[in-house]
Amino acid sequence: MARQITKRNYYGRVDPRLVTETPTAIANVVRCQVCVQSAPYNTTRFGDQPVRQCLEHGFEVQILPSGFVVRDLR
Image (tube, rainbow, N blue to C red; front, side, top):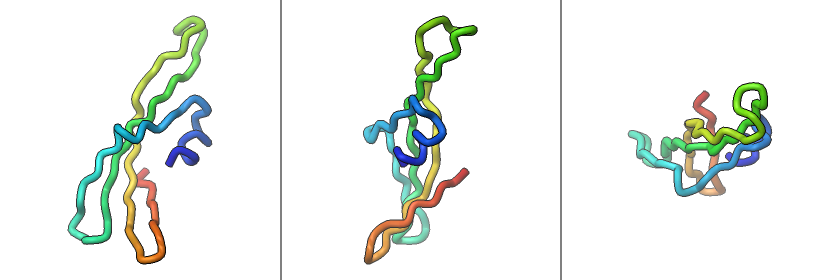
């Protein structure tokens, strides 16, 4: 997830402590949500300091015998 998110937002960082997991009706699928710590710069609005914000990002993880499949929910 960190690789996927930082492709879109250079200053984005995934904090593993902020990932929530919710079981689904399917035994090997977990729905997750992560808070991405983002610090965009917009000098015309905020000056020379980044403004930290939390961007929610949802995804599902399917557990397979040979690994995991991650599906973006956007």
